[in-house]
Every structure is written in structure tokens, then in C-alpha cells.
Image 1 (cartoon, rainbow, N blue to C red):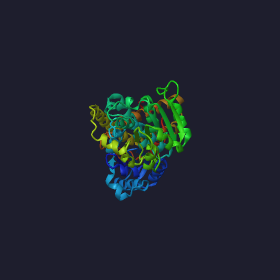
Image 2 (tube, rainbow, N blue to C red):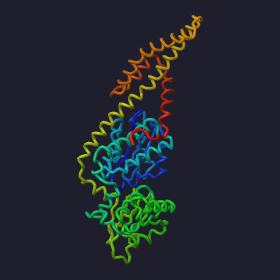
Image 3 (tube, rainbow, N blue to C red):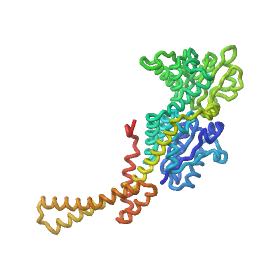
Image 4 (spheres, one colour):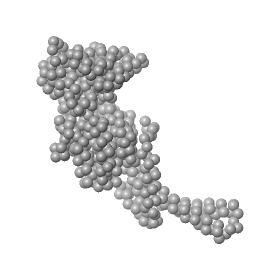
Length: 455
């Protein structure tokens, strides 16, 4: 089986296509279950963010896998296969690992170096685990991607290369002024109460916004976010925040200096007519930041006098010419090293069930021979029988030690996949025994983990 990723992002597709290809939570779950039900795939995970949709799978056939994953992405989005195909990219085996590790480090983000992608990768893994579509390979891959991303942020200055999408968007609205100066005292309407909205609200609270109003379809979530912002002892404790139901959005928009929207809605949250109505009778300009994919705010708002709209499309254009930090090269070196290490570990893991099966078979041979010896020499006392047993086991262990250690080393090297087959053939190991060891090991590794590796 081999790792395959098929996807599209802001680098490969226009925003108009990305919007229609965006997947909500239910669509992601259905895509995952349909993928593992398809013939070429044994495992699956979806990484869906505001500027990418990627389907990862463990497949047994490359061409069939690409065709199946592309078709599934089309079926679960609003983009036909013929239209979608030119915008898809495909990465296989080590290149797929390299791609995810680069994504985890923020190298492939719209804003280079942003750290929000780590939370999105963690969510993608959690979804795959909860639906039992992420097995040993994808669990290992995504958990290692999280470690690589954290390593990049802790060992380099990649954070200086860019900002979060929220900060970048606010910076575009501020047009060169410090965000803390531009946002100070502003009345802010935040539409949505998810992670991006929470980050936006906290960023604006720290920047000194005068009032933050949070609107959400589930009022309890908006109320919870408002409480968090005003919680004593937090770095946003001085904020003024309140929650309102979605039907209050038009009235709050008319009062706001800035409206920021990031929901999972499939249609527009603010139409051009909504924004135009909010402008009636006001003299102050209205700033709009749309971080949703598909878009929440009608692009027609760009044409309205007194409105400054920044959305994913304009952010993509603004980030295209953003300078790359010198630390990016260091992060790329980290990614290259980690890809090599991951590949070696995966290749070595393939040989492990065969080695375990070989040692199990050897232990069985020893037990059988000791039993046969006891039948032929019934007069052996307990001490003598124990000494003979230990001696035979030591001889077998010593004979097996060097070849099993060496075969693990050889299997970890590029092109080492054939050593497991050679070992099975040389020792005439039962394939079903090897498979059962592999299944037992894989079952242990597919459970959600806690505190594994570097934090």
C-alpha cells in the first residue's frame, strides 16, 4: 500500500473554484467513508481549510487511486470532474509526505509561516480517527506532521515570515497603519463562533476594539465566546463583548465600523443589498473582512462607495508578492530531514511483523524440541531441564540477532521493501501468521494517542 494525496488549493485553483469545492463537516465525513469503501483505498483523511481541500489515502494502485480520489472529490463538491481536474495536484509516496510536512510548517499557506494550519491538521486527524478511516499509515503521517510543524515554529523564525490569516487580513484593511492603532475603539461585528472567528475576536480585543458583538446561528456558542473574551485574568479581560442571534446582524451591521465573517454556511451570509442597507444614513466607512470559504460576503460589496472589503481572493493577490523570510530555507531543510526519517521508519515498520513472526516460529521450534527431549530423557530433573532450555534459547537468539537487526537496517533504506519478502521466503514463514502480527500491531496504532512525541 502507498500514500497518495489529491487536492487543490489557492496555489492551483482560482477562488471561484475553491469556493464551490469547499466541504462542510457532513460532506467531509461522507467523503471519508466513501473513500475507504472504494476499491483502491484502505485509509483516508481530509484536510479542508479556507484555501485548500486535500484527500489523503493509502492505496494499492496509483492510477486507479488518482482516478477514484479525483472522482470522489468531484462528487462531494459542487464542481464537475471535467472542470475540477485541471486544478488538481497529485503527490505520491515521499512527495506526498513532503507536501503535508510543508503544509504543516506553513510553507504552503497563503500567509507563509502561519500556525493555524496545525490546528486544522489536528482536526483532520481527529475526524479520521473518529470515523475509523485513519489507520496506521495516516495516524503516523498526521501525527508526525504535527511534530514537524511544531519543530519548525520552535527551532526557526518562520513565525516572522508571516502572520495568521486574521492578522494579515486586518493589516490589509489598515492599509499600512498598525492594526492596534487602526482597530482601537472600533465597533466590531464578528459573524460565526468557530476557531477562526474566536481568533479574530481575540485579536481585535487585544488590539483595543471598543466593542465586539458576536453573532452565531447557535446563540450558546456566541455567548460562550463572549464570556471567554471577558474572562478575568485573560489577555482580553478588558474587552467589551456580547452575543446576539443571527437575526440581529442587519441592525448590528449598521452600527459597526468593522464586520468580520467566517462561518460554514454554503450561501451568502451578507448580500450586497444587506451591506447597502447598512450604509444608509451613515458617514463613517464600513470595513468588511471575509475569511470564509465559500465566501460569506457578496463580492458585489467591493463596488459600494464607503465599503472596504477584504476577502480570500484579495488576500491571495496581496500575498502573492509577499517577501519570503530567510528562515524559510531552514524550515525546508527540516522538512527534507523529516521526510527522510519518516520514510525510513515506515520502511522499517514493514519488516517488523515478519521479524516478529520469525522469532515466534523459532520459539515454537525450541518449545517443540524441548518437549521431544523430555520424552526421550524422562529422568531429567527441573534444574537440568531449565539449563538445557536456556541454552537452546540462547543459541537460537544469537543466531537470529545479527540477521534480524541487519534486515531492519536494510529495510529502512530506499529500495528496502523487498527484504520482508526475502525473509519470509528464506524461512518459509506462513503469510497469514505475518499478516496477523501486522493486523495486531496496526490495531494498537490506530487508536487516538495522547502526548506522543514532542509537544
